[in-house]
Image 1 (cartoon, rainbow, N blue to C red):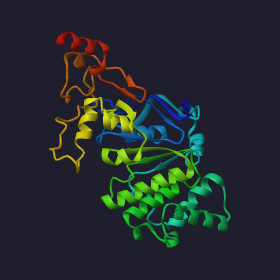
Image 2: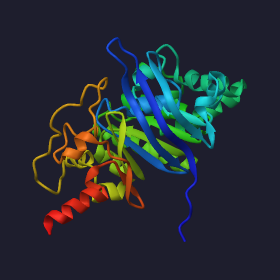
Image 3: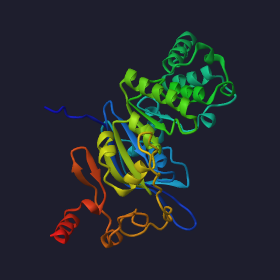
Image 4: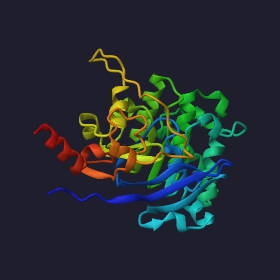
Amino acid sequence: MTQEKTSVLQVRDLRIQYGTPAGAVRAVDGIDFELYSGETLGLVGESGCGKSTAVMGILQLVSPPGQIVGGEVLLSGQNLLDLSERDVRRLRWQKLSLIPQGAMNSLNPTMKVCDQIKDVIIEHTGERNRGKLRERALELLSMVGLPARTYNMFPHELSGGMKQRVCIAIAIALNPTVIIADESTSALDVIVQRVVAQTLLDVKERLGVSMIMIGHDMGLMSQMVDRIVVMYAGKIVEIASVDELFAHPKHPYTQLMIDAVPSLKEHKPLKIIEGITHDPRHPPPGCIFHLRCPFVMDRCIREAPAMQSTSDMQRVACHLYDKETQEEARQSNV
């Protein structure tokens, strides 16, 4: 008997746009997904697809001229978009925590590592006992694999990988329910990437938290996550378990992204996704990907595909898997 999964975070019809003199940019255009208890969920797509904006919306950290214009973000059943800024601040770090993309820009260069960790604990718990704060800061640094000497160091004295692990330590300081890692390894060399990625997995297992990992490296995602959400131009085009996605990718965009990953086993030229993303102020009619899709049909230009299930673990927004399209293909082969 299959054990029913418990959903800890649900995103429903989330829409975020940025106002410009030439019109609104639809950065996130009606996305739906959920995160289960103890799961690591990957959110992938090329730069500008809206994945980082989506998590900023979840955390209610979208800055003007950005604006959340619709949807729901349910954390353990509570809609975060209905809460005041004060109430959301109370939830951050304790329930929902962010590991930012740029560790260099996230850490205060004028403060020691220990003071930056303590600030979070003091601000959200009121704890001011120096002994307890020091003990907790050292414990957190040890959890992310940093030596005790890091405690009294400034950010400029640390390597890129060490800075990123300090950001992880800060993010887990209050044992949150959900951790969001926004391209935490993107600015690091491949060796350090592996160290930071393993630190994330170790922390997740030790704390038993749920995690959303944002990135564009499909190869790294294949080793890190349980399920993958593929985004393109503000929309979700495919959701699947990592095994299902790499074994049987459905959406043409997903297929092209996987084919762009170098392989040590197969010597073949890498495929390139032709063309560029459309002007986000003026999305095309029909399928959002039809301007770059190698399998585009007349129907794709006229009608936007609905998200549909192709298996228990996979959903895709593509006309290739509509019953109508498959029936037409069957008739043409008769």
